Amino acid sequence: NLDRAVSEVKACGKHAEATICYTVSPVHSIDRFVDLAKKLEDLGTDTICIKDMAGLLAPLDAYHLVRRLKAAVKVPLHLHSHYTSGMASMASLMAILGGLDMLDTSISPLAGGTSHPATETLVASLQNTPYDTGLDLTSFQPITEHFRTVRRKYRQFESDFTGVDAEILTSQIPGGMLSNLAAQLTEQNALDRMKEVLDEVPRVRKEMGYPPLVTPTSQIVGTQATLNVLTGERYKVITTETKNYFLGLYGRAPGQVDLDVMARATGDETPIKTRPADRLEPELDEARKELPASAQSVEDQLSFVLFPAIASDFFEAREKGDLTPEPLDVGSAKGPSTAHELHLAPVEFNVTVHGETYHVKVSGSGRKVDGRKPYYIRVNDKLEEVSLEPIQEVLAGVPESPEIGTGGKPKRPRPAKPGDVAPPMPGRVVKVLVAVNDCVKAGDPLLIIEAMKMESRVPAPIDGRVAAILTAEGENVKTDETVIQLE
Image (tube, rainbow, N blue to C red; front, side, top):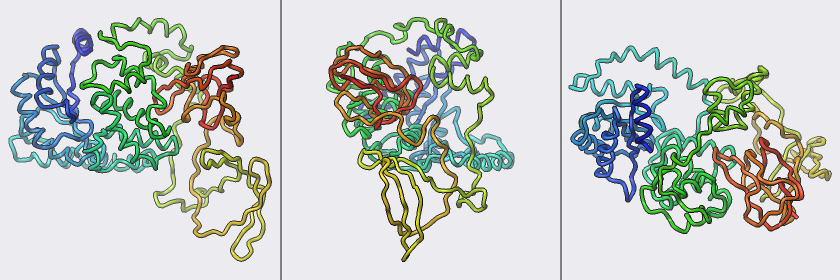
């Protein structure tokens, strides 16, 4: 796979940097990394990067790895290490002592946690040594102040999992993957299950032959682990990318895969033994024929090929002039303090209890008596009276933006019969694979949904005929909604 990539980069007169994805497993060792580095140099790479995406590179291991690599190859070495485990500064210093040529750092307001070691810290550590960078620490001050302000401005987009987390030494989850998992679980209203997902990741990784947790395999392993937890049954839902991994479309697994899981994922298909990209037909020219008129640049074309539904919405909004950035939370970190920051509580909403969703509307309220205030609410259109005794009250803050296209009541019925098909988790419909009156067998794919940036096929639960399709491509669907009815 890398041979063609490196040769094409070189043919364009550009700099090729091949990467060793550093990880720890029963099948990875310094000897293996050194052998890989030699092969990469033979391919013609200009530099080699040691990518320590999970912050697993221990200080002494960093020293010995760099020393071994410097003795084995002539190209410059580059270290890219995340601070998630808290070891990156120590590992960086030891790698420098071992002969490292280049190091990635981050300006201090954005450093640490799932980011990199602080630039200023490493510059100061190397002053008056043979490795002195020659950089003036005072020159960083205006940059530091700028990004300290920027980080405060965009604090609402920060994950709760951005500090040093020693559990990474067990889960081996990279910084970027950790942030993505937190965002994905938040999207599924399941952030409280992060610990379960972190425990599941090493199991899935072992079953997949210990792939390094770096894009795209980090996303494949992480999403599959999340699905295993949220659906309540391991591999009940298998993403398209998990299936493709076991089919060999991402290359050869570093170690032995679990054959039972592989059989469940691949079904009747046979894994390939050739270079995956050699099986691809040229598709860009064909994709250009389907491009919206508003898609003009190369970036637009690539966006459409990769994410057709999302890109089409983006192009349409851009053409209409409706493209607006995500609104920023202008309230203070301590909560709202001025009148324009206060908001009323919702009076109509859905409540899900033990998988059952109830439509609730507050119709009115009475006068408080003995500390209790009566409310008159409709639950699925049935009027009820409840009494509320506040224990603790707070000011309501900035509300979340409503989901586009959702109203007060569910637009699709809840599943009630064996033939009522609901997605295993909330997502966006990418493609409907059947039409009304089609006959299907249990297990046949009915539609493809995208959830947590991965596509999954929703299978038919029974043999039957497609009686109704209650969704369309591009729509968002939920687990309590029937999207296809089979008879």
